[in-house]
Amino acid sequence: MKITPKRAQEIIQVLDGIKEACFKQGKEEYLYPFAEWEQKREQVKQRLRNLPDYLEQAADIIIVTRPKAGKPKKLNVVKRTTLFLFTRLMCKSNRDIEDLLVLCRPLFEFEASYKYVERLYSDQEVKVVLYNLFVLLLREEGVSGDLSGDGTGYSLSVTKHYRTDDSKKGYVYVFRVIDIDTGLYVACGYSTKSEMDAFQKAMQMLTEFGIPVDSMSLDKYYSSRKVIRLFDDETMLYLIPKKNLATIGADWAPILRRMQDDPFLFLKGYYLRNLSESGFSADKRRFGGVVRQKRDDRRETALFSIAFLHNMFTVRVRPE
Image (tube, rainbow, N blue to C red; front, top):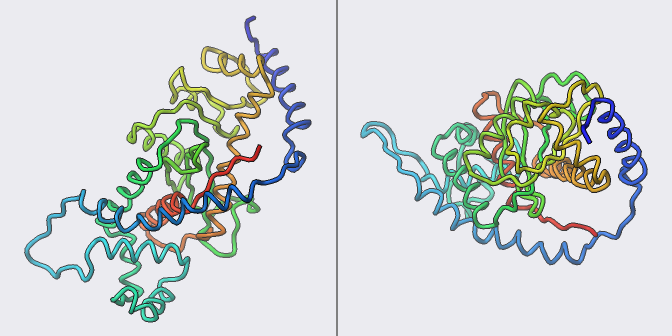
């Protein structure tokens, strides 16, 4: 049966009915498997134990050439990256980190000023090591190919909150692609312009990593033919068109047919994108929802580090 715009509207109405009946937030009750979660927490401990080895591997991959003139770095790249990750994990100001380093001198065996800490965000060697760490952890953990993606904003001021501020001004945007099976971020994009610009950059990273995309769940905001064409024909897209869809074409037809054949199963796949929202919520509680850096390149480094730290600490348990 050919799917017409009228038929597409009927399918969307059916989805709305199923959504209200079966997928309304808070309607389904289940017992969260806390025992399994505690068992899987061991994965986090093992990642933390392996982090020094990952750091050494990530640093050994890069080749650094420095001019003969000039003052040598106070700390090697492994120690600088360790200090940077410690700073991000503490979620404190640079001055607080300066004080903490004095307190923890027996552990770190060095001290650093708040200006030194801030300059780590634009340190090219630290950025490369951080990127390598991200890739090494993904290789170690594995990626399923069943993905979800969503965007959010990070405030530049402590007085603003992205979810409740309708103006959406005074934010920087990030889009992260998350693996459904493991809960790991596999790609991310950053933008000062819009979530869509951040999305395009995340898709570019996904391509650079060569990660196969078997399925992808996206919010209605990304419901456009331009987005659909970014994926192969074999990719199962869970994407709902906007209600003003006027023409179907070859792009929307396969998606609408899957909606028509099994609306419940389609919505079940579509709502896997909630994992992205849960990830954002957990990240902002743990690492903060405010970007304190003033320079654009430093903001990007700060947000990329959150993606890596999320992967270090995430535990994925799928309730029945």
